[in-house]
Image (cartoon, rainbow, N blue to C red; front, side, top):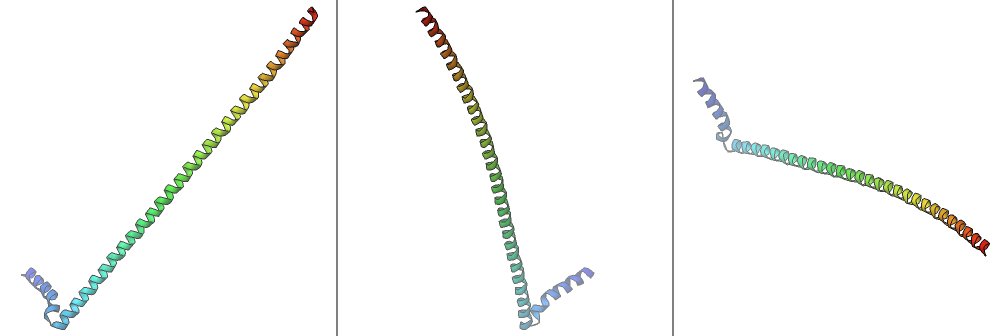
Length: 124
């Protein structure tokens, strides 16, 4: 019996604004429309918030990717510069050694040519 009375009171409180008259029903409808409008704006705001959050995350991700790309590019440039420097040093060293060997061989050939010329001159 108590549950029935509670249910009856709930139904009466919900239906009363619509049964008291036209003005009361219009006021209740206006109140409900305002509540719906408020909720709609709230959800729109939430949508805007979500969109802004997504935009921020996209910017953050883009910045992180750009930073990582710059770091990789700089590392590659440093590696290439170091390799080029090493190659240039090796080429310079090999060229210096080759030139030294050519000079040594040339001097030795000249000495031997002079020795041969002296021997030929002494025979004549």
